[in-house]
Amino acid sequence: MAIWVEIFSFLSTTVVIALAALVVAVISVRRRRRRGVGFFHPYTNDGGGGERVLWCAVRAVQDDYPDLDCIIYSGDDASPDSLHARAIERFGVHLLRPPMVVRLYKRRWVDEKSYPRFTMIGQSLGSIYLSWEALCKFTPQFFFDTSGYAFTYPLAWIFGCKVICYTHYPTISSDMVFRIRQQSPMYNNHALIAKSVWLSRCKLLYYILFSWLYGLVGSFAHLVMVNSSWTRSHIEKLWKIPSRIKMVYPPCETSMLQELPLERLAEIPTFVSVAQFRPEKAHSLQLEAFALAVSKLGPGMHKPKLQFVGSCRNMEDNERLQKLKIRTIELNMESNVEFYKDVKYRELVQLLGGAVAGLHSMIDEHFGISVVEYMAAGAIPIAHNSAGPRMDIILEEDGQRTGFLASSKEEFADAILEVLRMNESERLKIAAAARRRAQRFSEKRFYECFKSAVLPILSRPPPAST
Image 1 (cartoon, rainbow, N blue to C red):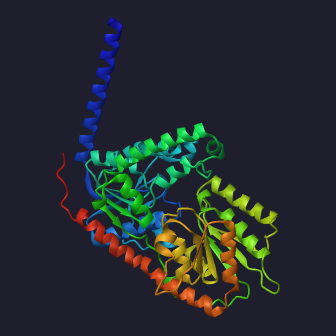
Image 2 (image 1 turned 90 degrees about the vertical axis):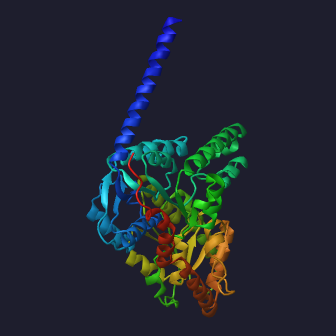
Image 3 (image 1 turned 60 degrees about the horizontal axis):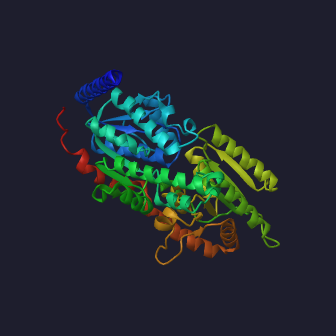
């Protein structure tokens, strides 16, 4: 009995010492807090819409709050000048000055490859450790998460930061839980689990528990900006802080695209697909639908061309791209399909300017910046009938349809065929209406809504140090 008393006493003392050390560390860090905005964005080279939001957010803060330093927490080997140049070259965003950079060396803790099982909770808990590294190196007055790591918010709050976030999509949603209940196989629900009632129930329990935790940590945010109606509805249900949630559509730089002629002079009609080569983007569905549409073309019709345009984040994305190329050969479509990897913005504009339509097939795409880019460029969008494209983007403009929504390979193929069979007058009417619709999601509109949302937070006097 005595030995158990000693063990309990030792453990209690250890816990007390650890908590005391933690309190001392937090107090020390809070006293070093500096007036600045720390942007938590571990992957500053992902090339997607999230990175565009990051640079536009930095520019907006620099515009209205010149006394605030902008700090980028990045896991990449990047310098202030290299990030400044990247913002211009990749996204056309001209920062007023290079941001400060805090290099993070623990990024593997949020790498999905580190968690082949229980990926969501693994990355989420790993983000706490990564944010500890970030906040200990530089503690800002405002902690701004632009990558969706909600589990970092309580720690930033403990460190005395005002927590702001721009949420592109919820880490978990009721749609995901529903698919587990229905045992639907998908890229994030392995067929082995979907086929097993017992495994599906275990995963369902895991999802329900994670949903509760996600709702708890999200409630620590002082200001939440969401990018679409779909994201807002899910975040409001999960985080239960509707008064702190603001809708701010993502910045879609369409000024150059709006200047492109709506007429398409090329003899061969071209379809374009702009998306990172990630599994959820469902490129294979587009390829299969395109091949099906080509097989149904009537005699005398020109065979169209499909151009895949995107970036690769890692080796897995590169492997996915190679498999897509192999499948193209298997379908005997290599003369009709082209691939463009990591193109500069000006080349992207040229490709969009030559396309009659654009494809986008991700299920529950939270918003869909590339869909807006299609519309602005005069390319008729054909997108998945869910989330952002259905609820916010491909809606009628002045009573005129602005694009097509589809769910299956057959529906995508039918939409492709309908575009190919249109006469020029019909196509121009839809393209013109789509371009007008795209103006609702401009970069200018983002800056206006963003600045209005952050004004009550960033304009407050800094809290006293503890």
